Length: 167
Image (cartoon, rainbow, N blue to C red; front, side, top):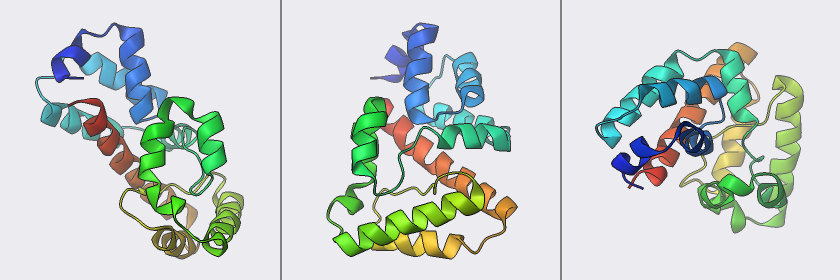
């Protein structure tokens, strides 16, 4: 849709579209309140400002709107509204060998046990091996540092999705 079409959506429709981009209800509320946007560039700028003002709790809420990296079955079942976007974002996993997928699953479990949320990475353009390497390296981070990294990755995903939403 165009930015003009997005600006004309009613509140509920706008919230639904924004939630596809980022699952933080606080961020969505701030974005909806900032309409109308003059351009995609302005929307992306406001998205950054609004994300920067979000709390750790907002980030954790946003993370719950993502499938685990490599869990394509979960992607199809639980995340129907964003499965096409997330599926394309995780395209590098689709061609991964079974051993890498098993290691990703194991790493995801370890990550979730350590940090209390799923591994968030902007997967676009990354192979499964690259994501596995990132996951393993980030397992060594301090929880506060890791949350900031994960929130940065969430924002990268949000920007990609805003660009998919607005033509």
